[in-house]
Every structure is written in C-alpha cells, then in structure tokens.
Length: 307
Image 1 (cartoon, rainbow, N blue to C red):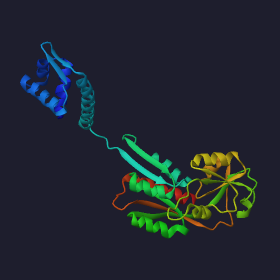
Image 2 (spheres, helix red, strand yellow):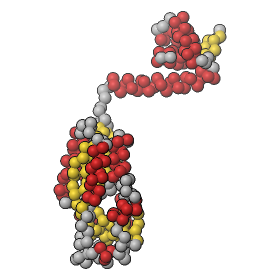
Image 3 (spheres, one colour):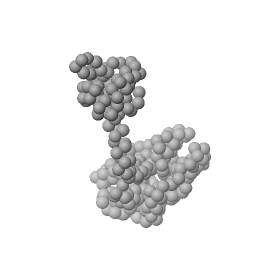
Image 4 (cartoon, rainbow, N blue to C red):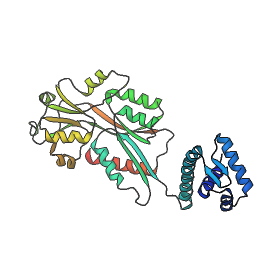
C-alpha cells in the first residue's frame, strides 16, 4: 500500500467508474485496475464491487476510504504548509518553584515573543524533584530547583549524576508576608514564637526523595506552628492571605506591587536564618536558544530588582 493507491481508491469512489477515474488520474485503465487489486490483496479486504454498472463500495471499503481521505488530507496540509513557506515556531519551556520574582520575569519575557511567528510557551510550577523529572523525562528545556543549604550536597550530587548543568541564580533567606490587618503587621521585631497562634500558608509538596518526608517537613515546616493550610496553587495563597488576617506565609523575593495588589506587607523574622538557593538547570547536551537567553536576562533583572 502506498499514497498513490489511496488516491486511486478515493478517485474511483468519487467517480463510481474505473474508466472515468483512469481519465482523471492520467493512468491506463488496466494499470489502475491492477493497482486496486494489489491494494485489496495487501489489506485482505474487497474495497469495490465490480459490475456492468460500475464500481460500488463495499462496507469494508467504506470504512477504509474514511481513513484514506484523512491520510490524504493530512498529506495535503503538510505539502501546502511547506510550499507556502514555513514560519519557525518559537518554543520555550521551563519548570520552576512557586515564586514571585520568577513568575514576574516570565510575564515580562512573554512580551518579547515575536508577533509574526507561531509560539508555544510552557511554564510549570512544582517542587524541585519534579522540576528535575520534567527536564529528564518530559522534554522541558530549562528548570529552576530550590533547596535549603542543608540539602546542598544531596542536590549537587543528584544534578551531576543526571548530567545536568547547574548554575546559581540567587540565594536568600525567606521573609514573612501577611495582611496589612494582621496583628503582627505593625510589630518591628517578629520572632518565630510570635507566629505560633497564627495560620501558616505553605506549599503542599516539599520533597527530597532520599530523606523521609517527615524529616523534610520538620526542616521546612518548624514544629512550633500548630495551624497550617497546604496549598498547591500560588494565586490561592495570596487570596487567602488577603482575606484572612490571621494567616502568614514565608516567601523569597516578593515585588512590592504584588504586595500592594493584595494588601500585604513584608516582614523579617529575627529567628529565621536558613539560606535557600535557586539553581538554573538544563541538560548537558542542550544548547540555549535565543528565547532561553531572553528569559534568563529577564530572570536576572527581576532578581536584582527584588534582592
């Protein structure tokens, strides 16, 4: 079976006549008849019933012709696309932690996409292990992993073993954000023990595979907080912080305009000393595209603005 055989069968069905189809296809009638018989033999079905009145389609033939027309339509579309000139599709994909400065960099980067070319951009927010998995298994080009310096050795070893380039983007200590109406919003020096009566909004998926989840949560989520709301969607976190003045959240780099939008304030906590790192990663055999470089430029600009 080949594309010509499909075209022959579709034309015979269209005209209902072997003779008329041979004229339209500029092929001799005996050759056309032989081609259809070869097609039927290769498929093991009868596509047409032959009679003095012409060629009629069998039930099996009707089903075959549905698929034949779909295939020919796809081939025509492909040929027309290249005949009319192809516009190269702009592609970009990145998997990142849930954080404000990165999402703002992506928003500004999206404005740099060429208007006259097709584009596909993927922006996925998740935990660090899923970021790595997206690079290795799901064809994401770039990733940013975030980890506490307590897990520096683990992540560096893992990234090297997986053949991933890793470059420091920034390091930071988390700060608090809360509603302007939060009871601690006007307090100058906030201590960790001051937070105990209130509700922490936190990400729902801290994950370091070689370490028990209970141990990770103990490091990332101190035991002195008794009430927590675990959220996967970052926008929902800000909605809750805005609506419930008894809530608070730890964040990295938060732009002031975002805080103003939700009526939030940013506060330091004297007891919080742990350092975190954001690391850009990509496959060792991957070459950064122009779009990748544009995003990285915006990422660095956003980081400098809010550091």
